[in-house]
Amino acid sequence: SDLSHIRNFCIIAHIDHGKSTLADRILQLTGAVEERKMKEQLLDDMDLERERGITIKAHPVSMNYKAKDGKTYQFNLIDTPGHVDFSYEVSRSLQACEGAILVVDAAQGVEAQTVSNTYLAEEQNLAIFPVLNKIELPNAQPEVVAQQIEDLLAIEASDCLTVSAKTGQGIAEVLEAVVARIPPPKPGVDSSARGLVFDSKYDAFRGVVVYLRLFSGSLKPGEKVRMMGSEMDYEIKEVGIFAPDPTPVKELKEGSVGYVIANIKDASEIQIGDTMTSARHPAATPLPGFKEIHPMVFAGIYPIETSDYEKLGKSLDKLKLNDAAFTYQAESSVALGFGFRCGFLGLLHMEIVQERLRREFDLDIIASYPNVIYRVNLKSGETLEVDNPTMLPDVMQVQSMEEPFIKATIITPTDCLGDMMQLIMEKRGEITHTDSIDAQRVMLTCDLPLNEVLIDFYDRLKSISRGYASMDYEYADYRESDLVKMDILIHSEPVDAFSAIVHRSKAVYRGRQMCASLKDVIPRQAFSVAIQAALGGKIIARETIRAYRKDVTAKCYGGDISRKRKLLERQKEGKKKMKSIGKVNIPQEAFIAVLKTK
Ligand code: GTP
Image (cartoon, rainbow, N blue to C red; front, side, top):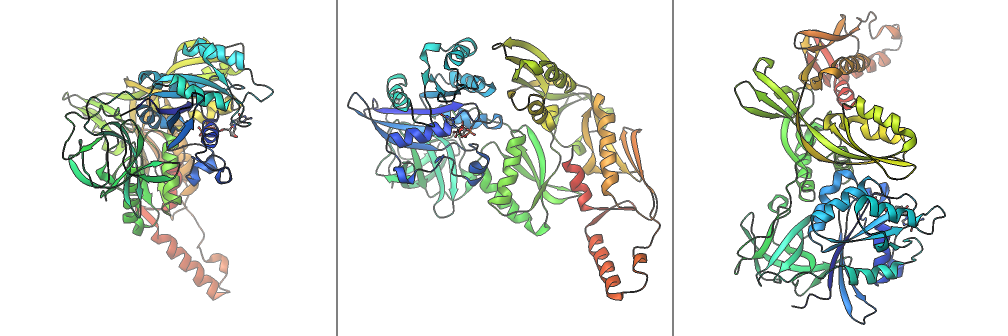
């Protein structure tokens, strides 16, 4: 079939540089959306995205463009998210494309994710052309930024287009450049159907909707298809394109991007990166899959109401379908009851999953303190992977421990360089390169333990730089580290849920912090209670809760009997939610408070 009129591309950028706005303008100009239907940021259709102004999921859109050469082209545009945690979404989108528009804010210049997304696109051998956006702003400096692009990314400054996605200036040239600078799809190796599944979505009425890029062959309703990875067969009910709403078509053809609805009922049946082929004439080889993504951050998610456990499980199942990077498995905790141990790519990813559970699935949940995966090398020669401090083997068996490191790219204003270096040092990081971008900004490349970045690194980086610094990272490797297990003892009883794996140099600080926050949330008991942090048998921090003296009903001085009864009832109510650790009753809120704090 003729592929010369097809262009599959995506837009990559640093957060807020204007990807979604540019995508909207492109849709408008090609007439994919009628003017009156146009709302701001049409592609960001999740509420959460609209509110936070960030793109979380990638949405494909097909449109027709009548070019200056008189021919009509089919554009398939895949919008991509911009945040560090979602670079896996970016690489999935890239694999379905032949080219990428690199958007850079002409007032802000190259930022950390401009650099990292360009690297990702280059790895996929995509044709990249840079577009300088927001040029109508008085402080836009297109020449300066074009030079940065040449210096830092080795893309010629003269290749840059200049646009304002806000006013529409220059957008027509972008469309022509898509035709001229992005190659059409290469013909398939043979005529067998090969569709790369790059996303999927669960629809309550239609079951699982599979998003794919067809690299060879075609797919039609009524056909039997096979997922090459899972070896499951299905019958196609509908195929279609995103125009931008899902629109059924008779046939999905080679080179195009669209969706398939088959009799796939269960979320977990579809693996992102799998190849869909014909069951009757299966392709000899699957497409190269996506790079497997591994969650790097783990935390427990528990329902506040125990009766919501099953609902939580089902909701996680549905989320997982739409989010290949997310993992979970059942676990239970003394403190929090039955819940799930969940794996995320990073903190924002974790926050978003929690937020979606609350909003889309209407669940009340709490999450425990996040952890990374540590490698524990045992004296026996065995290596364990541990993400939960309670799973650590006895110290006597341990030869050494390793923790994950990231390679971070930080772009910072020069005037706060000193504070930034201080922060990196405090977080046990090491700067490996310093490149100056211009008189005002520096690019730092450094190695940091992921564990230290988890907690408040990003917030600190933003506050030191008054919001101007940007950061992106990739996972680097595991390195040996002096890690220890810190236990928290309450009235001499160790409490599993409070144990943590920490770097030895941070243990005292963290121990004091935990003891102090527990002191605030554990109510007084009839006897005095010691709260201690310990490494092995050694106590490194301590707080004491003194015994209470007064009877709880004393302040009613026997007067109002109904008030007294109410108070006692409330006290009983409170007791129900207490967990007893040895002789001490600890309210559930104490666990929640401490597990959530730093
Ligand atoms: P994420 O989806 O969060 O990664 O951001 P994005 O890159 O898609 O950016 P978005 O399109 O949401 O634009 C970010 C902000 O810049 C919004 O407030 C836009 O209105 C604004 N913006 C986009 N293009 C222009 C432009 O050409 N000029 C001006 N002045 N503002 C623009």
